[in-house]
Length: 67
Picture 1 (cartoon, helix red, strand yellow):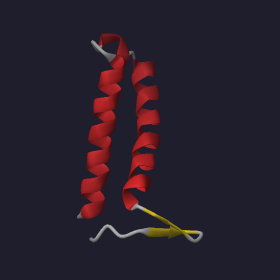
Picture 2: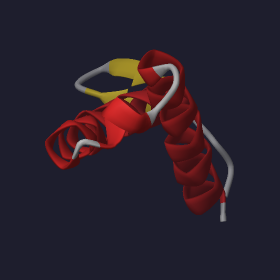
Picture 3: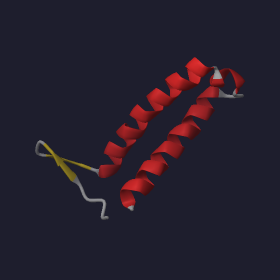
Picture 4: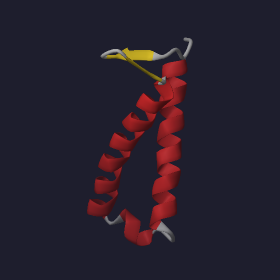
């Protein structure tokens, strides 16, 4: 698949920006699950952990869409 611009009501948007938003929404849910289960209490640096989870989620979305 080629990553071409997407037309949203007359505005051309890069597909990576939509993937960034999708990963951000997924991370919000994952963060709530991590807080609820107590996982973030056992992590050395919670912000760094969530950033790494965001990068993993974003790269997974890009790989799935690019296939």
